[in-house]
Image (tube, rainbow, N blue to C red; front, side, top):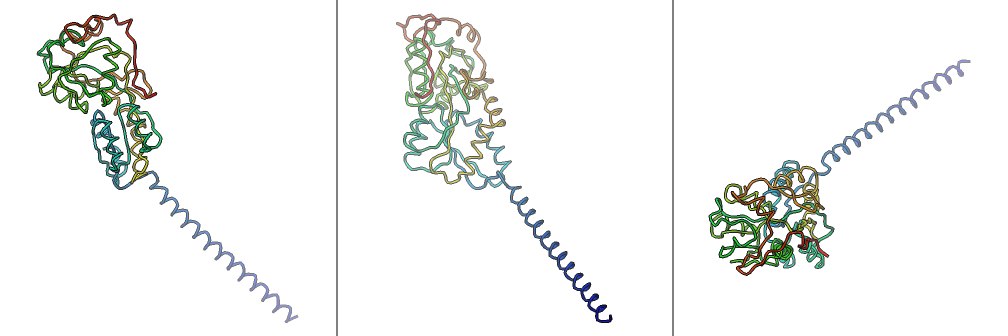
Length: 320
């Protein structure tokens, strides 16, 4: 009997020890799991953030909008430093082809981006904006220019060179409207055209509507028919980015809601649009504007002939 009681007591003691050990093991595993979960939560809290330097090659017409988007990107990613090179799109592609490193390329037309893609300099492209051309003159319009017509006879007209996206668009526009242009100079980027008009060095210049808006009180905008010529702006990560994560963050910002709102504010049209958004900024000269848009365009030479608007062909700067 005594032996049986001692055996029972021993059994109870053994069972208690096993239970305590089991509880202790469970508490230990629970603690480890909690720590692991906290670590995962901590890691995920930094997800989507990019650090380091990201280099963006962008068409000159994008400068104002991209620099504003940059502020938002760097605010959301405190460790990220976005740097730019704003040039004519053709020069940016040449720079990449020459071995200069960059993470993002944004051009002012599809054909220039297509050249980069054919050379395997970029990856997939996304269209993020559109733009159309307009005419600007120095503030006050001293030469009384009314459009792409005989008022340009003897005027110092500046345009972009044919290899530049705005120059390619200018050629298509003049063809669509049936006018002949006699420029005094052809520039390698649209901002140089704008600069010559703002300084008074040129009497008129063909630029994007966004550049007319950027000129603000330094130039007047003369409304002209767009001839159906629309530039489509693509953006892409380069083939060999040094900061792929940073490139993705910047591209997402440009194509996302905030970036699109900034681009619209600067006068760019929506991606895929057949016409760029209305620009705000440079004002039309007195007596120009609607009247010059409605009137048939004449050649900018003494021998130019009028051509009815309805009979003119349209053109678009999308790549084949």
